[in-house]
Image 1 (cartoon, protein in one colour):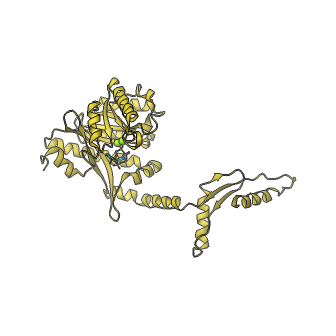
Image 2: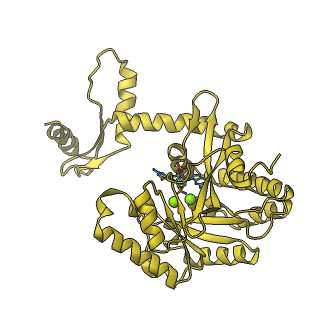
Image 3: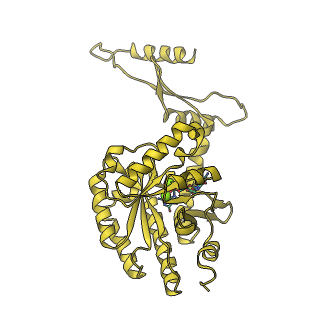
Length: 334
Ligand code: C2E
Ligand code: MG
Ligand code: MG
């Protein structure tokens, strides 16, 4: 009924003629806020209707957006995070956590992934799922990734000085980084600055980067290899991948996304898919990491299938630096 009423308004307005007796042919866009609480101020109702207008869908007669409380909350939350992100970075509220990767053959820690955590003085720990998508939208991810990388360089440097036998630490790169021309130069500078030993860092490219960026990605992989480091495809299988692209991308490691191991695919068919991907990776001389592993049966199956590494809660959750040092370097670090 609402869209009928709005359609009527549109058609009435479109019956108006200009000086040459022609109609204007206007398309009107409506924002709808259904008043549920009469206590609200009219201004705030209008504001909500205006907000709804930014989120339009077209029914066959009118273009309208309806106010959505959830969308509004999300937007407010994003504004709130944006207001404090720069300061948070200065105040060192972003902290790397490390999640160990286990080698299935040798049953040992063979590496770890650096995952960012935001320690807000009021809210406490905030998980990346809440802010990474926003930072990817607003570009702040470029600064954050470089900051995280520097933190990891410092750690590796410290461990190396302490005489630990180092395992590679992987860091995440995102789409946004690739929008900055020559963004990798800053990374190279940090590698030099902290004298990072070769082989101790791995760069993770998210799978969505494969799409349309193959030349750029391969050029970066070449630079990474020249420095003596390795790189991987992260979240493989989560959405954008094309098996065909795998043959052209010069990475060292394939990380199978959690989706392979969750949901109803657990049956025979699911296992066949995992088996095939692992074999394909092997044929292409890629090492394999299975992510998000929570069950013992999954580990047994993956060991049988000769998957190289597992990163999952079954072995260890992401942990703070101190805990990781205890686990991996047995108190060597003072
Ligand atoms: P990711 O790179 O795929 O990292 C793995 C995620 O899976 C982590 O979530 C980890 O905690 C989670 N995980 C690992 N094992 C298990 C398991 O057994 N069960 C379950 N349920 N989850 C498991 P986290 O730390 O919340 O990070 C989420 C995503 O945020 C990361 O996914 C990555 O895409 C992004 N991210 C985190 N830190 C950074 C960063 O410094 N820079 C960038 N660009 N992205 C980051
Ligand atoms: Mg990752
Ligand atoms: Mg992943």
